[in-house]
Image (tube, rainbow over the protein chains, first blue to last red):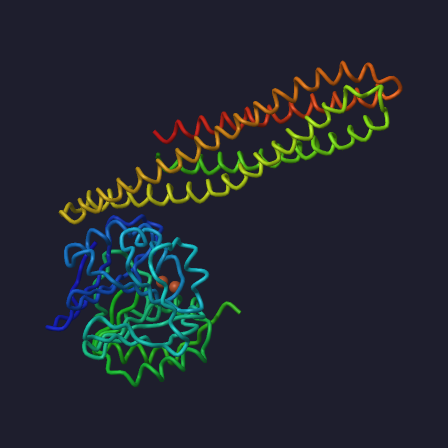
Length: 243
Length: 201
Ligand SMILES: [Fe+2]
Ligand SMILES: [Fe+2]
């Protein structure tokens, strides 16, 4: 499991974990994000069961296990949170922030110790001591109960499946040539994203934010100009094609 | 307990529960038969006076069997939960083991130690539940042995009951066959439990 630092300040830092070489071939590659504050950390979209061991080993190189007090699941998909039953044993005192809509579903992954903190449809925040992460509604992108995480200080938007690309495990971390990257994203967005209306709504909301890095759950991350390029491209894209 | 054994144990627990339903149904039949037999014995009057204590006896042990079976039913449902916990802690232990292979830090070693301990505890719990279950089944077997004894005795009494002889005879036959069926189901379940306990080591 490769770890990449995205942001570093006195208050907190962002780490991205992914490009796991030990991952079974037919499993979609995922990016996991760790936001590490003072004595407290949150893991964003912890990943599937298959990823638990490499994630645990990777995370412990950066924090103590008891510092990992919080988990966040953008939505209910297995690639996001099917590892929950194992985290439940590793972090019995932790809290999981996830859409209220999916509580009865996510609990099927096995949760007898961790506390479920349902996120209201309008969003909310995750507080780690003196830092606050905003939970931005992203419903129907692609899941009907879906949130992204925005850090106003680091100017990072963790955008879940929005901006996702289906690529090889050894793909670079950042998008360098947006035009060349489109082919890895187009089908994914047209087929997985169901609603043009929800898409337009999300773009309007996200344009209000000051974003330096947009960090999706699959594939490369967007930085600087590439963020704007993505939003422009996404605005024009017709989604929900399987109807 | 390996992954394969875990799945096997779930299947075994499911089988035990399915068999319980058969035992319970048969025990209920026995209780009904006892009630009918008492009515017949009453009508037969003096000629079946030797039969009356027998019907009381049947009534008593069929009630007992129903009680034991219901108790087992509750226990078996708990067994599913206990087995699930054992599965989860086993999987957790396996996954933490994989993490220590990737990187061995003191923290991971401590976690692995905890995981092992938890796995042992959960397995122990499952083992205790299985032992309890086993003793209940042995209890039922004992009850069925006395049922078979009653069937023999009641056959003798039935032959003295004049015109009621035939219907009382069929009661005796029914008790004998119900006891046999129940004993068979219990034997199957005891075998399942033995195998299951074997996989835990
Ligand atoms: Fe998804
Ligand atoms: Fe995903």
